[in-house]
Image (cartoon, rainbow, N blue to C red; front, side, top):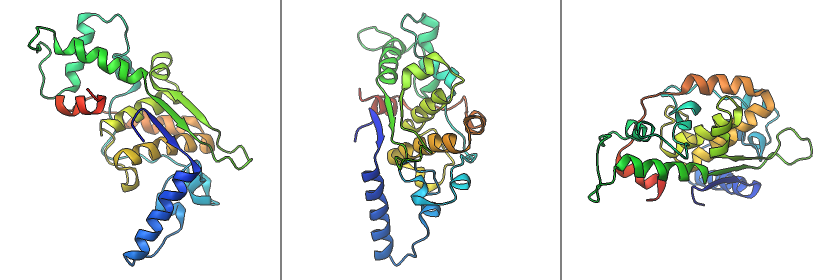
Length: 228
């Protein structure tokens, strides 16, 4: 699965759990209940069928913090950006000056601004709800760029920017099951499921408290995430 869309289906969730169980058995590790193994409101399985969804469907504060807030990401979505706004790209690149040029004379920030905007608007998050007929957790599709551009205070915008922060590996301090790209997708599922079960306001409060404005990446890693 590529980074253009996060799509968690019941089949992929079962496959993950099966893999973990088989690996654990082979390693001689005791199997703990699924709700504790995942530590997440895994929406297509609702914590592995746990009966304690109210306690497992929670977004806990993560010590290292998150990346950029919806308001910061929104700065990169202007289709007619001023020169000053385009230089904002340099604030997230640790090894590039705002006045840096390519050999052709084009400003790097101008080019990267356009590429980053397209990258964000091309992202779609698809979350599959629990689908057991209870309606506990609904399906959800989020157009990342639109969610952030339209309303930076909505749950959808927070999910969208948390997803982007994960792609740049800026969500630090999360428990081990949320590491890597697969963990990033699982964390997005967890956020949505937690909001559906326990309410969006609690989730937004935690995410708001996690954002850090000083997250940066190298130019090389930035290009790698964008695929350019």
